[in-house]
Structures are given as C-alpha cells and as structure tokens.
Amino acid sequence: MMFSDRMSGQSPENITPVQQMVASCSGAILTSLFVTPLDVVKIRLQAQRNPFPKGKCFVYCNGLMDHICVCDNGNSKAWYKAPGRFSGTLDAFVQIVRSEGIKSLWSGLPPTLVMAVPATVIYFTSYDQLCASLRLRMGDHAQEAPLLAGALARVGAATVISPLELIRTKLQSQKQSYGELTYLIRSAVQTEGWRSLWRGLGPTLLRDVPFSAMYWYNYERGKRWLCERYRTREPTFTMTFVSGAVSGSIASIVTLPFDVVKTRRQVELGELQAKNLSSQVRSSTLSVMSRIVAQDGFSALFAGFLPRLIKVAPACAIMISCYELGKAFFRKQNQERRTFTSQT
Image (cartoon, rainbow, N blue to C red; front, side, top):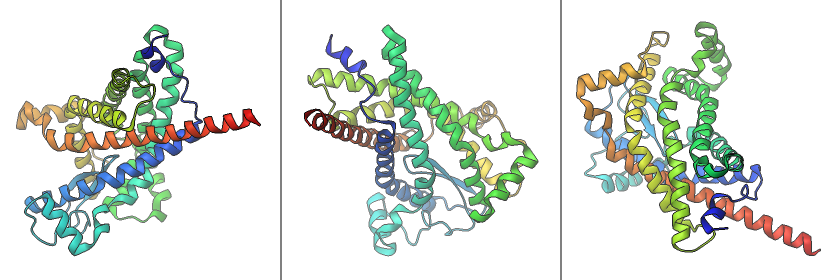
C-alpha cells in the first residue's frame, strides 16, 4: 500500500468521540483566547474613525463566531469604548492595556465560550465521524470524503446553533435578562412560528457550507502532501498549522461575497430588533446581493478582503493545529494504555 493511501484511508482516528470533543473544545478555547484581542483592537480603531450612533449595529467576530452588537450610545460596549486616540494597531494595544487592564483585550469572550465552543465541538466531532464513515463507503472516491463530510457537519452545527444565535441577538438588542429567556422563546414561536427561530439560517449556510467543504478538502490534501514531501506518517504541528492557514485563506476568499451579504443581513436584523420591528419582512439573500451591486458596484461584494483574510487564516490555523495536537495526545495515551493492558 502506498503512503498516500495509508494517509487517506486511516482508521477512524483510534480515539473515542468524547476525546474528539475534548480536543475540539480545547482548540476552540485557545482560538478564542488568541484571536479575540485582534478583533477588539480592530473594533476600537473602527469606532474611532466612524463612531457608532445609537441604535446602529456592527458585527464583532473573534475567530469562532459572529456577534451582533447594538449600540446604546458612544461608549456602552467594552470592546468599542474608546478612551483616547490611537495612532495605530500597536498603539491601540498599548493604550488599552495601560488604561483598562489586559483583561479588556478579551471583552466579549464569555458569549463566545458559551455558544461557539459547543458549536465547534459538534462541528469538528461530526466531521471526523462522518469523514471516517464516508471514506469506508466511497471506495475509489475516498479522497472526496472531506468535501462531503465538511459540508454535512457544517449544516448540522449551524442548524443546531441557529436558534441560540437568534435568541442571543435579541437579548443583546432588547436588554432582556436570562431569566426572561423562556418567555422570549415562547413569544417568538407564538407570533412568528417555530421557523422564526431559524431566521437567518439561509445566508449562514450559503457562506459556511461552501467554506467548510473547501476548507476540509484543501486541508486534508495539503496535510497529506506535506506528509509525503517530508516522508512522515504523522503530520507535525507546523504541517497542520500551515495547511489550516492556507486552506482557510482559500475558502475565505471564495466565500467572501456570501460573508458580505450575511453581515449586511445580520446588521439589518439587529437594528430591526433594536427598534422592535422584528416582525417586518426582511430581504432575501439574493435581493441583498443585488442591492449591494446596484449601490456600490460588483467590487463591494468583496469588501473587507484583507481584514477577513488576516482574521480567518490564523483562526483556522490555530484551531485545526490545536485540535490535531489534542487528538495526537489522546491517540498516544490510548496506545500506551493498550500496550500496558496487553503486557499485563
């Protein structure tokens, strides 16, 4: 059997689903810890150039998920409250730490840990299980298994988390306590039906499913190519980091128009909810895309190219390399345990 065949047809990880969950959970937490400060500084600089008026929304993303933030006034949210003037990114880091403490660089992290970590655990664990199963069934086409597994895993994770995303947006915009959560869900279902809990799922899937399919396909191929090039059976941390960064960059560029549309719709949704107009009919993905092209030209669909690339590439690299490192740790532990058991 050739080396590439061994890599593409590996057994289902030799670790349990629970161990996969722990590995993905640790990867999600580390990704949030590394990437959140970058977006905090970006939001501060953005607020300095264009102050957010009351009732206006913006999207805050820390590598794992988007957050819709509704502005009450110029300095109500910790991650865009600007106490002074910043001359650049490094100056912003220094001033924020000096005036507010280093903890302020992780503003907005708790809601990510509450929502994004479970979603990431579902997503990565589902991908591994689906990919292993599909590789056994697809035979000669086993190399395409990551493409299908990535798409299916993202559909499942996005569908599960979508109601929580909508509820969280309403909690932020309407300033309701967590004690009112049950009432919030019940009232939304009564007035708009169960489907209202999955509002916005369409544009999310249009962006995330192609991204996930391309990401996993390119990641697995890149990892396998690097392993063959350096003649190693197991990919190193550097190999997974580089493969994750490159595959994430490619996927982010291709799906950028859908990201622009999703951001526009998220902002519109948050502003409608802030004004208690959530029952109004919202524009479709196609109509938003047509409006963007008509108002700002076709190039507007690729707005934010560089910031998205700078954010997505390291986030993907950190997440997948930490995840693979965690799986390698559990594989080694399981192997040592089996060896010890066989010897005794």
